[in-house]
Length: 146
Image (cartoon, rainbow, N blue to C red; front, side, top):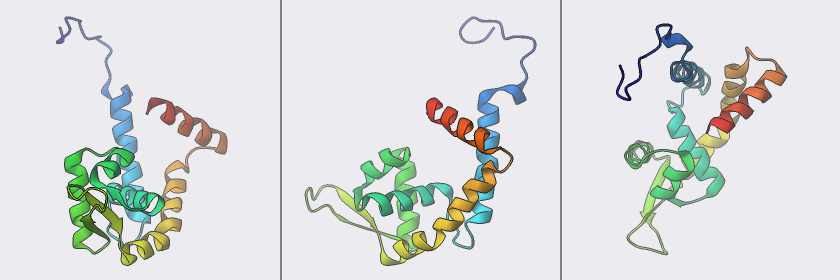
């Protein structure tokens, strides 16, 4: 019996489970991203933070975390690594001195602009095994799961 008192099915196959398949798909997508993004040495979460800052402008750490679906500890770590590389900068929020605002530096802005085509190529490479219709269906289904 499991924790809920149910007997697990005898035909349970890990490789057929949604969590397993999503994890494997995520690993593949991340590998393709890292290979395609170039020598920028950016992780997918760092890229997400930078593109969000490019699109939204300066944000508080909390806002950035919410928009990129990162927990506070991950957001803080991503920001620290990007600050070390002079890709983002932190400064006190002019509206609320208790809050820190994060924004792209000029170096960060230039890097994002230079890598947009690579990121789009990573997207295309990840979905390459699918037809155009399958891509649309797949992305729509993923959106429903989110």
